[in-house]
Length: 173
Image (cartoon, rainbow, N blue to C red; front, top):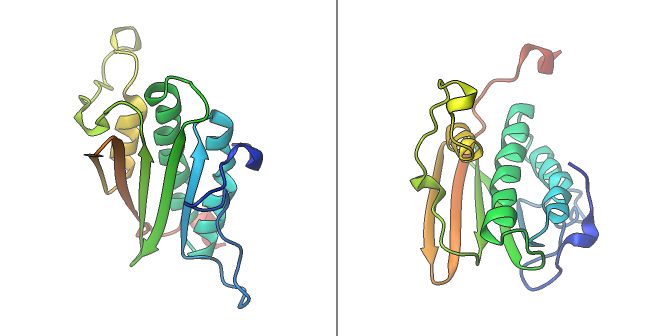
């Protein structure tokens, strides 16, 4: 992912980046950003996700899973929810408590429940597989839970990722 902060929207919801460290040197406990619906803006939040993971001392595996899940969910909003049209807002919220990352992606695209998609047949030969749905399946598999709610004219996808995986041997050396 490549950082491009100029593609984020500033506004009432928050700055395009996680808030800076406080005067005590501590990083913020949460991320609350409003992004422009563009691939560049989606890519721009990687540094914020990494800083969030560092601030909470999350494992490299959790950082990887969180980045992957968010890239999938946010890219789906841009490409399918807003059909590639740039400029519409996406809100991303992340928090951490009790070794669990809680995420929320909110958009005002047409109603779409990713949890209602059928599970793809990953054992079928490639030429027999349906196109699409693999990223949502991966997101469902990698998260502890993934839920969808339609609130008024907005889609709200919530997920949680447990940071309970011990570090890999290489990570402890």
